[in-house]
Image (tube, rainbow, N blue to C red; front, side, top):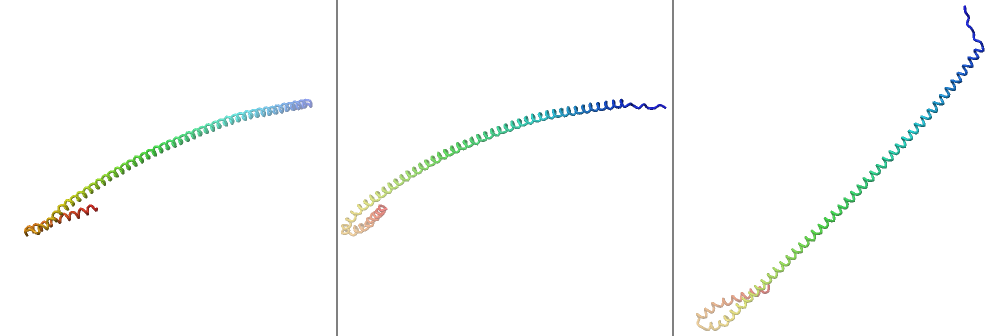
Length: 198
């Protein structure tokens, strides 16, 4: 039966050295790999941070641009609204002034028409009063003239009455019959005096 050959110490020592050297190489390789991995991760992280910062800056710029745009639009809208309000106020003032002027003209025209009407009525009333007074004066004068004529007619009748009484009775009766006729003008005279007193 064959027996196994046992390695010598030198071979074992060489193998141990080889294993130690290999472990060292592996350790160095692993360390270098970890270092490279860390460097790569740091670089990627720096790149990511840079991108994030760039994006953040861009977003901030966009937000600022949007805010400025909104402020500009708001300012423009406020200016347009202010101009519209000013225009409306101006138009309202002009319309109010026009209405006031029209109302003033209407009041003046109405006052003028009323004054003219009152003047015409006063003039007409004055004319009517003058005509009435003239008619009254004419009536009074006519009555006075009639009274004078009646009085003038009555005077000769009174003078002729005594002579007629001394005459024949038929003549006295005629004279007596005429006496009431002579009294009628006296009644007219009294009426004329009353009219003149009025």
